[in-house]
Image 1 (tube, rainbow, N blue to C red):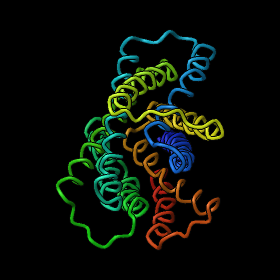
Image 2 (cartoon, one colour):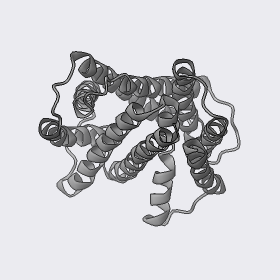
Image 3 (cartoon, one colour):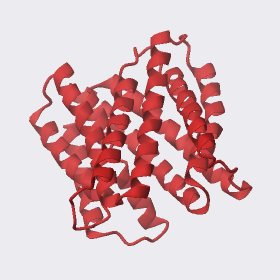
Image 4 (cartoon, rainbow, N blue to C red):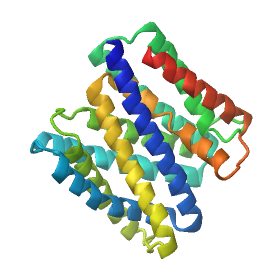
Length: 282
């Protein structure tokens, strides 16, 4: 049991590292170009390498149910992503981002407790600390916590979308991992392309920006793959909560590379995130 929890936490930590790094590189690219074009281009770049990896390394043919679950997860992931960015554009980051992250974590944790039984005492404490860490890491430091109806609506949509994405990736049979991730990426890319074209927000990123865009797509795909491995290795709640600590990685990179000043809440958030990971893996 202990070895399983540690393995799950390690895979989930790999997802957090990849997603957090991808958010950092994607954030850099989005400072210089339209955010939706960056997201779509990143997914377009990552689809071909993912297909090649699936063809080379996956021995078993994918089940139709796994491909369907991956596609459904990809759709919900894009709904969550678009809702999050819309909420950030129309509301306050300090309310929308942490609230969406908390919702996205709580739903799989509750379902995991129902389907897999109650976690250990240390894991329960770790989950509580992790939720606090997620809020601290995602918050912009604002003091006013009352959410407007618009902020609440888009945070809820984003959180439910991301939670459904986690649940879909957890439903794979375990016989294959890369093919469902490929199906998720294909579905999310197609839906995002429709959204961007309908809003007429597509413009090709400039050539000097393409390596950063490609890195963003590859890191996001790697994060999805590690999350699938984590969910297949052990408990869904462990996989979800640990991987949801990815903002700590983004904050650390912003501090190390961009020399951005860490707010007090973010410093506490990074420390509590590491404490939560340690407790969850016990």
